[in-house]
Image 1 (tube, rainbow, N blue to C red):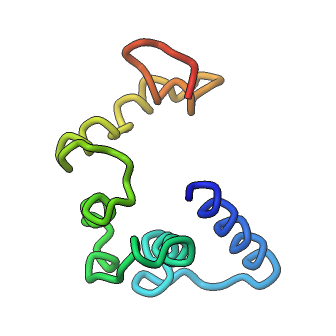
Image 2 (image 1 turned 30 degrees about the vertical axis):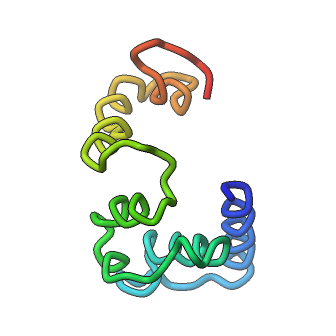
Amino acid sequence: MIRELFVDMLGRANRLRAKPEFYNTITSNCTTNLYEHAEHVNPEAAAASWQLLLPGYMDERLLSRGVLNTDLPIEDARAKFQVNERAKQHIDQQHFSLAIRDVEEGKKGL
């Protein structure tokens, strides 16, 4: 599903290159656009909700629909996947995206 989602997003990026569109706080933003990709890939997992209009609730919505791959309760998942402090610690590192994933063990793997 991840590959299909990524390919769908690449297709949209190519379409935007050919025909740009305006960002809209309500109808065309990071959350609504991601929802459209998820719906295209798996309509059953991406049911519409008022939470699309309030991005701060989207992680909870995706977790309840089984889209996020974790067995953690929402608060534990938020704490585990929060990268702000890790990002600050590794901002100047050459392999930033790898460094923020596993700070405790210092692993360079995915």
